[in-house]
Image (cartoon, rainbow, N blue to C red; front, side, top):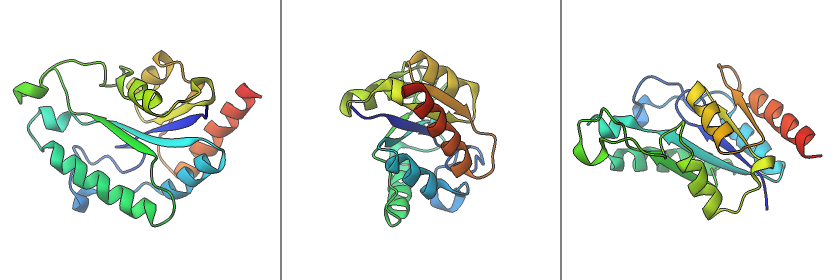
Length: 173
């Protein structure tokens, strides 16, 4: 089994402008492709997990998420750095769209997205980590039994990933 790095989206992969769902709103954080390439060079998989409460709040639909994620994968794929897989949670207990207005385990700090990915891609959780920009991201990593997590506060994502990979290597060797 291989390890993995789970990346939060808004605030880690892209600048969080609030409910980003269109390509013209999307602004890459510096170093994303290189960070993913470093994860893959370490023998780990790169996964994207993201809460998308904008669906439950009626700001956009799941088709908009699919289109934005396709754009991201195409852009990263051109550099050999596409995510191995992506999960998102469209739910929120205060949502206005009835079918999405609920609490669920996939919404971080729940572990549902991590659990889904590790079931689909057999993953050594002790050799895995998460990079997020909120406490709920780090709580999800802890609850899921990941080996390490890092709070990303901005800058070049390569540096945060290098630190996380170093920490994971130290834990597992």
